[in-house]
Image (cartoon, rainbow, N blue to C red; front, side):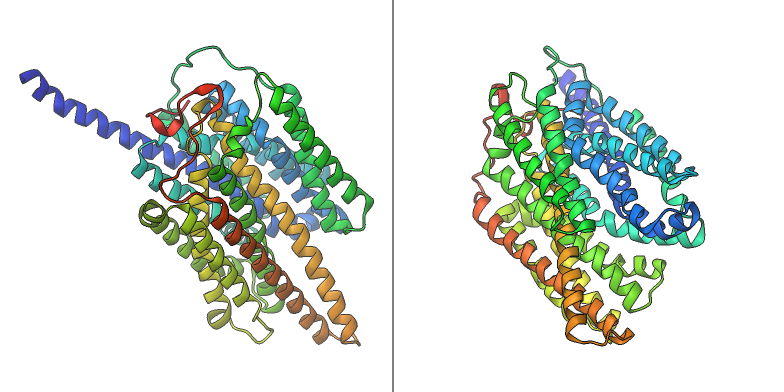
Length: 507
């Protein structure tokens, strides 16, 4: 008995230290995730200044964005699997260092070609970093209550990162220089690297090291590259472009070939049982649809505030802060109270329906609308919507996956969000452009007033279709998610126990 009583305080202290270490791990992971997510929008605001400085054309400027999205989207599943093979901690630190160096290269670029190359490198290292960050979270937090809290924070960052990027990009471009939109990543990465070295655990691997599925990697990377390129090309060259449909057709062929190969591969890149589980499949679909709808918010509300209401970049960024606040609030309420009580089958459709409401509110905007009365309520509703959708979906997407496949399962979350963003950007831009052209044709002559009205009309069209995306998401998620208590399948590749079934630590 004396030994037991004397050991209890020691055991309690050790447990407290382990718990504290987990939360510091979350801090490092959250910083890295924020850097990757905000980089998708922070550069957008810097583009006009970069174009004036480096002298590239309007036709070329899209490649500053596209180079990042192509590398990031096409290499995500490879990055996730590499984190499974070489260890989470090592992959996390390599991703951070590479992203920082690529950002420094882009900030120092003295030519358009070097800037585009740096952006592609950012995308490649981001494809390693993003799924690894989520995999570290998945394998670190296995206690349900702590896991809910951690995914609440992570989901809030995933949803709010784009708006934070707009705010940060506006401030850095106006107050410093466009190059600081890239240099800032170096300082963020250094903080995350220090945190990773100190707090992310790296246990010894048990059993033989699995092999990389090279044919599967080539097939899926090619499929994702052609998919993202096809939608990016539709945005710039239109849907009647042969290159657009050629790339999309090639993507379908490569995806079908990838699925057939995964059924027979000895060491599959993405075991099909991961995505065929109803709950995980519903989670991936929800992230994709929410990503497509969200681009209607950031892209067209930004245009509306700056072009129609005359806001500066900093004012535009500040305008999104209430939305971020609502998103963070909803994420914490959702993961700590509502998801444990109601499950994703209730919370995700609820968030999708809020998304429909917020988008429909935006369709009411006119040239005479005001921020406080018209824009703010819609943004707050949309913030609460995303805070209800993302944490529940991201937590469910990685629940019950064997830890040796946690990286590639996490990569599917990022892939879904990236593909959703590409689809949303291409479709909504095309619909908006068509609506603007039709409006001008119906209201000739094309005076400045008519053109201004046409722009607002085009944004409203995009919001209306964005509401349609969220409505489809509400229906699909309500049908696909299992009822609470009927969780994810625990049948995992190679018959291993699921990650959520036993405490594990990050690689």
